[in-house]
Image (cartoon, rainbow, N blue to C red; front, side, top):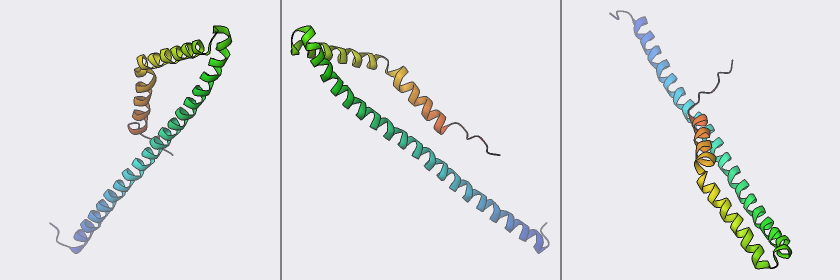
Amino acid sequence: MFANDKSIDNLESLFKEVRKYIELQGQYVKLDLVEKLTILLSTLILILIIIILSMMALFYFSFMLVYALAPLVGSLIGGYAIIGGVVLLLAILIYRMRKQWIFQPMVHFLARLFLDEPASKE
């Protein structure tokens, strides 16, 4: 079937090209994974920084509200009780709505990041 050397050279060349293609596809998959992990980690770091800064702001605003409510309520302890109750209700609300506010957006973000095919650039 392969009587001449030209056919064998063509097969060897084809085999080398297929190996090179497989290696390039492996490198592409690695680069794509690194890109997606970079986006994921940078998003997580950004969210962590925003949460920390928001918690600090909530801490200071809660003290401000306690001192603003103290004259209206009549005591500093009453102001702390009101703000503590509001923060507790807020925590309960966030816990009750965690699927809609936290889990579903996170699942949609990760699915869009890892499962959607990138638009072809032509």
